[in-house]
Amino acid sequence: MAEYQNIKFGVQDRIAVIAIDHPPANAFDRRTLEELGAAIDEATDNPEVKAIVLTGAGQFAFVAGADIKEIKGMEGDEAAIRAYMQGGQTLFSKIEACQKPVIAAINAVALGGGLELALACHMRIAGDKARFGLPEINLGIMPGWGGTQRLQRVVGKGKAIEMILTGDILNAQEAYRINLVNKVVPATAVVKEAMGLAKKISEKGGVAIAKALEAINAGADLPMAEGLAVELDGITGLAMTNDAREGILAFIEKRRANFTDS
Image (tube, rainbow, N blue to C red; front, side, top):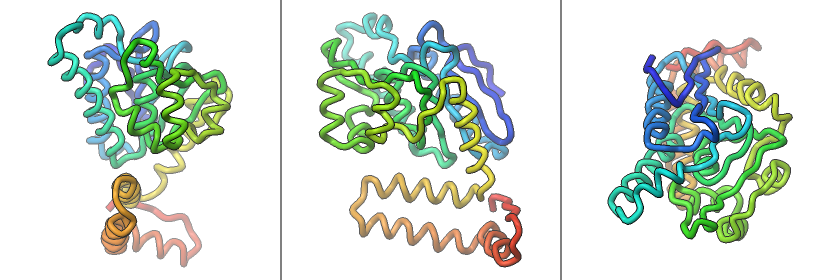
């Protein structure tokens, strides 16, 4: 297991739990981004891990955004700013493309890069005191880690434009109403709820999970006919796996399937 300074990493019941731990607000500086990427790689490469729960350490923030002081230090250096932003985009795209489900357990504030990180996750569980927003417009800039692209795919173009151009902060209940999060639970139960969801998914076949995520992600950016072709390839290949044979036999025999992820 790698050593981290700004990340807490552990595995429990085949679930990797990654907590961003960069007080006071879990802001993303270069080191934290690099360590998060390494933790995602560690969880992805571990065959014992079936799902990933991503959260923020402490009570104040899931992630409060990019480290503004670090951005200030790049002032006037276009190449440095581009590299920093591209690094975040690459990391969040890696999370979105992960073939193991990544669940964001949003315990508190998710602003700017924090919301962009949550949007890159496959599912989002929010605490009832959590707050959400892309307030970059108030600094004379705009979201740069996928916010302009992923938010509209989740909540619709009109609402995304409103949120990005006003910089307004939403509470958890409003976030749920617009489908920004899957579920709202008491703040103290966020990680437990996310772990429960991850455990439920981890009991399924890993090959099927990966193929389903691949089809869903690909289909989001493809015309219907091309998306259906991806789905067809996926289901055809899955039908040949040991897990499919076991799952079908278990159904017929009225017992729980014993998947081997093969």
